[in-house]
Structure formats: C-alpha cells, structure tokens
Length: 276
Image (cartoon, rainbow, N blue to C red; front, side, top):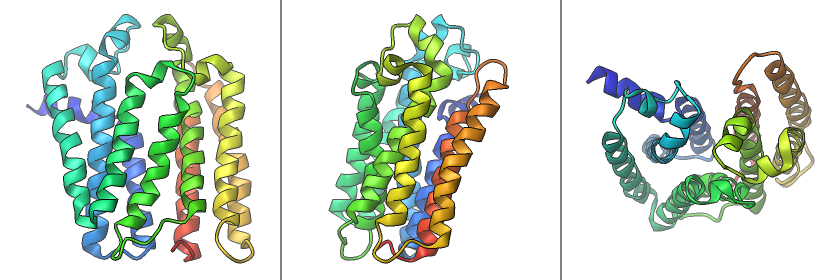
C-alpha cells in the first residue's frame, strides 16, 4: 500500500502540482478570500493538478516504456494502470464539486481549466496548437480564484492575459528536456516544430511578457518592485537554462525557472494590493 501511495505521488508530477497549488493559494489569500475560501481554492487546484498529472502518465505509459523512462511509476510497476485510471477519475470529478464552494461561475472556470489541460494530454499534445491548452488552463486559474470571491467579481483582463502568457511560456520550457524522447515516439507539438533554440526564445519572451503585463496592467505607475520583477523575469530563465546545459542527461531546470518566475509574479501581485 505504501509503495502504491508513493507511486501515485510520483506519478502526479509533484513539483509543478505543488508549485501551482501554492501559487493559487497565495493568490487566493492576496485577493481577500476567507480562510475557508483559501482552503477551497487550494483543494480545487490540487485536485485539478492531480487529475492532469495522473492522466498524463496514464496516457503516455506506452511511450514512456518505449524510451525507457525509469522515473515513471506506471512503467516501473509501482502503480498499475487501472489504479492510476481510478485515481484520475476521482480527482477529475472532485474539481467541479470542490469549486462549487465559490459559486457556479467559479466552478465552470475551474472545470474549463481542467478540461483544457486534459485535452492537451490527448489529443492536442502532438499538434501545432499544443500551446493553446496551457494558455487556456493557466488563464483560467486566476479567473477561478477571483470568481470564487463573494459576489463573483469580474477577473481583470490583464491578470488573465498575464497568466495565459505565463502558461504558454511554461509549455515551451516544460517540453525542452523531452524533445529527443518525443521525437522518437512521434510527438510533434509546437515546441518540437520550433526546436530547442526556438522554444527557449519563445519561453523567455512569453515569461517576460507575462511579468510586464502584471506590472503595467493594474492602474497607476509601475512600482520599483514591479520593475525588479521584470528584471528577474529576464535573469532567472537565463540562469536556469545555462545551468541546464551544464547538467548531464534530462534536466528540469528550465521548467523550474518558470516556477520561480511564477512565484515572483504572484508575490508581486499579493504585495501590490491592486488585483481586484
């Protein structure tokens, strides 16, 4: 039992799942949710992340086995495919149920983000529009958090746009370590068509655009904190990708750089006090 639980945790893509959940939780606290509201947001986003991570490993099980991925629990036998399928279904059903605590509009937005991410796993991952689900799902995240507030206020367009840009950048960074394995198994999403250099440039540009949107979107002049965040959005990916080149084998440093920029951006939002 303990091996299966550990396998399920590993199959959930725990690092990005935890990071996205923390970002959503911080944002919920920053926009004025009560303690119960923050908890509802955190549980909804966590359930969504679990469903997406588990379905990804389930769908890619044959591909991962073909390229010898020993870091995938479903290919090493730690988790059986039926167990992973059941866990995916439970987590997916939990998302709209938990999101209903914030009202029907919030639940619809959370469900949209989940469905979009699941559509990336199949069939959009291998298409030229593979970036679209990332943009939609990330854009839906702050919209859900804001809509879950009492009265369901309208999410600011600049906030949704910034999150969508961040998500698009995350897509290009996330795929970088898998380009070679993906090519062997026939995956041809947009990053694969652009290649490593094009994907790095796209990720860097999108992350910078996301941070600029967060700095310039709210009313009033940008703060020094915001300008510092823009500088960080330039420096952090560059350092991350340089470190990745110095690391032998599969490296997630590029995607970790995205997570760092995302955390910087949400801290900027929370401290600015100008979200809604």
